[in-house]
Image (cartoon, rainbow, N blue to C red):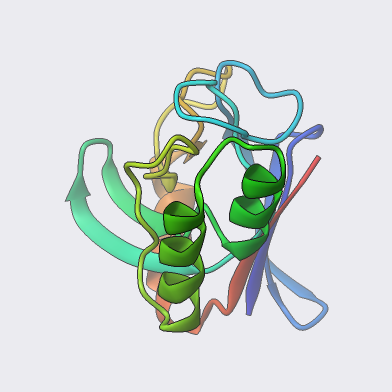
Length: 151
């Protein structure tokens, strides 16, 4: 199973092969255009991520944490001079070990799929779903191999 999020369309799909198990409207970060590049930019990342954390009682209810930044995010940031070698190595090692990457770097972190209204973009970079849609997604959390966020 995988999750596919189309930022432009504000649409999330839960896919099992070619079967669509869930189609849901979403809200994004307050600055939805373009990929997340740094802490506080209010953007939702773009790329392929894995679920690294599940919370039943997160700040906004049910919540699935993503392993942002991933190795590709970190390599791009390192090439641009936005992070140092130590941060790059820490992110790469966490990804290689299947652990949550450091969320306190200049790239930001703590990106979640979580409950919330979907009528306007309001998050700090997360993806919000209506509670009933998040309940379906949460139920399948252990079967989701990746979460792809596209422009």
